[in-house]
Length: 328
Ligand code: FUB
Image (cartoon, rainbow, N blue to C red; front, side):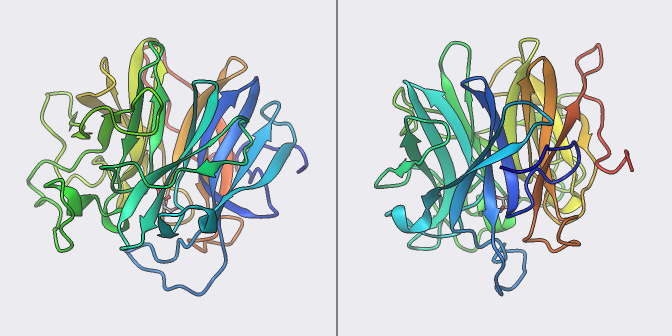
């Protein structure tokens, strides 16, 4: 167990952690992060530097309380279909079961989404034999809605291979749209009742500006890059995501879980390090943003640390922009 956690500081320091997905399960705050490792892989736009091999689960009884590391809950060697790179995971609860959703490269080097299950939020998790049929790209985030329908949101450009799936078959050489064309959106699919397959064909989400025009691929300050997350606030669906090479977490809002979403603004300004990735959760009457940065490793991109801070809404439902270093 770590010492008391503090806002805007690494919640654990004994391992590097990233891509936090936070949820309230059984009255506690559980965090499902990636587990960054030290190694000599080259650093490039393909993301070879993110060579993760297992997942740990973290939890805390209260924001600001000590953090428990529940240890390794799933390892690459126990995922029959996967070859490498356990990237950003998420967790969900339904059917008296906890589900860990995660991306990894299959034996052909193509990113797919997998599922593993447990009867406890802290695992250990047992992986399904195969990846979710029809799944592709990275960064799954699952919303179990109030009507019990479950949706998985996913996708990521560049190393996350989303550009290669525009025809819904894998095209190794496919490139993204031209700067003046609509940007690629994240993908949504409704999950089957047992949470192990897609109930519907994956659909691209449209993100539009206040005038209803799709965000363009050249609009790199606002367009989707990776790390989608959807939460509900006052009956509306908030889709937030990373803008990748402009290093922001931004958000868009819709009345429908499958969009279209209207772009609203920036949640988190750039952190130290190339990637930025987050989740949003309500716990004990407050809202929190979980995110990561590379401050603890002095800026080494593949040695990241999960942090959290309080997130506040304005009266009109917009989110107040957070400067991760504004308190210093
Ligand atoms: O951690 C590996 C990748 O980096 C994630 O899947 C992306 O969201 C980015 O954080």
